[in-house]
View 1 (cartoon, helix red, strand yellow):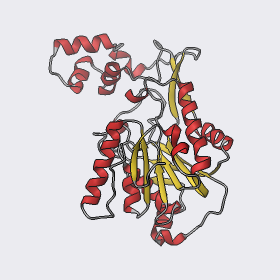
View 2 (cartoon, one colour):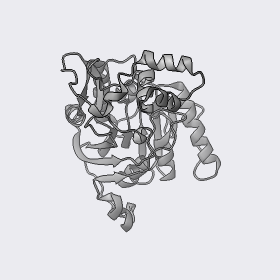
View 3 (cartoon, one colour):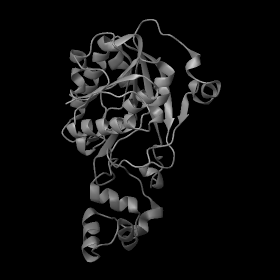
Length: 320
């Protein structure tokens, strides 16, 4: 069995084999979004859905009766679909800029060695966003020259997986990001909006749920406890992990949905944010992470926090 107050190097699909039944008061996690990041490239969309279904199913056993599963996720752009009609949009405001291809960007970079993306964009007469997309191949919505990428609404999919597992949609919150997130400086060249929010879907395991408004101050209840839309500043730099959520997000869920000394799980632990929030709120934590480097990163952050004397000390000897 996994030890409590530790990060374990394992696959999230195996958590019900290593966590005792009726142990977890709250599970908070954000899975891979299947949008083409480096750590997702070897997983097909079908495999991604099967992984989510398996992890959600495991929570029917490990959650305490009356406990919660909170999933932070965005509606996703998940896979190229050649059957979709290609974009037929004549953008007259950008016609003068011509067709900026990857080859043209690389040619400009060869002619101007050492030039930044912003300088290359000025040379080509396009935006820095266009240069970045051509270099990284991440213009994932496609265009008239490429297959379109299908936009998938995620809520119904998660609700279906949860209901199969005997868990029921209890609530959902909207997390609105601020202007610090990486893409906020960009603007679309179509009528589509820049995606500036994510969802938190909260599922409930049947059982008695203790509702204690005293966990929050009166001001907290008014500001966010009973509000569906949460305005939370974004992570300022994804320098040690490319997909971090702010500490305030799990902290609010932990404060709202758990009592002191409850056990909080994050089975996609990443850089350790949920564990840090649990410690600060005097809850026990349990982390599972597939990437050993991130296990070590999480442990280092936790040990730094407890090294300042802010909370109890934990033994991580068996974490790896």
